[in-house]
Image (cartoon, rainbow over all chains, first blue to last red; front, side, top):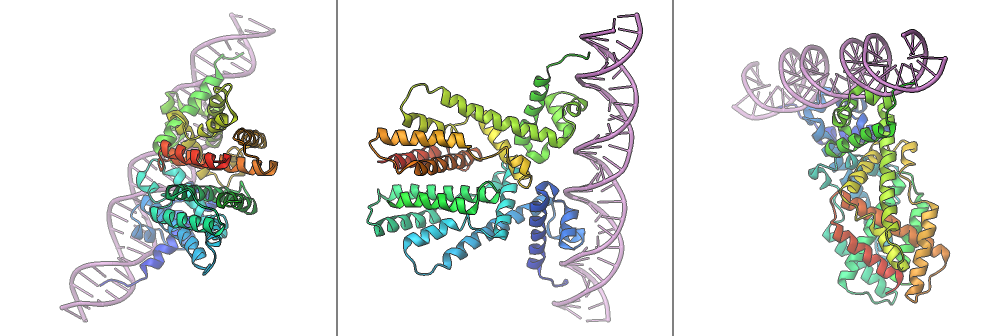
Length: 200
Length: 200
DNA sequence: CCGGATGCAATGCATTCGCATTGTAAAAGA
DNA sequence: TCTTTTACAATGCGAATGCATTGCATCCGG
């Protein structure tokens, strides 16, 4: 059998290099040679793990989305016991309060989106909030409204409000990531929306 | 003096070619030679009007944003006399009801944004709604609320709601442009938001 | 201990790129 | 008519790219 190495570590390292290069020079500045140099390995190794440039970028995107999701999930998990409204606010704020690394990942995802909009297989990775998350959020909204003594307008209503919340929060997060909005300003906008949504 | 030609027509034609190529093959597939071929002219002409690739893309972006704005403005101007609520709905819907050409332009703008997020001079073109538009929208919201018999919560409130409206509408428009949302679905979301905003 | 499978390094190759350079045809003043 | 300026057209060049190929070192089952 062959030499035994940590394949996961190798791939992770290469993908890290892709992220760094893409954020620094733009996605156009990512080449096999530069990735190899940035990761401090030979170009042969890059080719060994990723037979083509496309697969390298594809995996880099997969891992970036995954990492962002993990950060959001971690933020949510760290709340513990709290009111539904607190949970809701924290969930949505997670997207606009990303740290430097999270911002890098979001920027990278944006760059890939811009490059491969015509590729349906790629855009599937950048899918909008899934059914599960929307239902979860809708329940939060209903509970938070109830806690404030406001009656909701039904399940369909809550689901659509949840959709609006995530769409807005994502857009605000993107604005922050590209520097067109301050984190504080985005948070204020989000808070305002939630205040009105939950009944003032 | 020299040969007399329609410079504007030349540039417009070249920029059109850039849009077509970028939407078809992605921004990475845009090269001086391909632009020349797509426009049906020689490569020398491209160089004559745009000394570098960067300037070509920059002008293409400028014109794309300008064209999208013009379409929105045209939609707004075509309303004529109507209730403030109608005007408001029409304005915001303009972003998600773009025709095929408008969608192409929006896609192109997205691609450029993804490529040059680190370039502040480029991102300035893709600026969020300006002060004037926000004030105009805030007034519309206040008027529409009044027409429904609801009192607003003050000017600051209206401005922030206007901000939210444009942010949401833009995000929905992007979702539609990249194919992650149907135009009807986006319109329904927007209508729902406006219904709740203006008081139900 | 050894043969084959594996992980990688190095290099070569055809293509494509942006841009510079050079040449030329046309048209408005002189 | 001659000159000068403009608007291209054509070609060339060095650099960079993705990918294929080749060679070698390593390590484990037999």
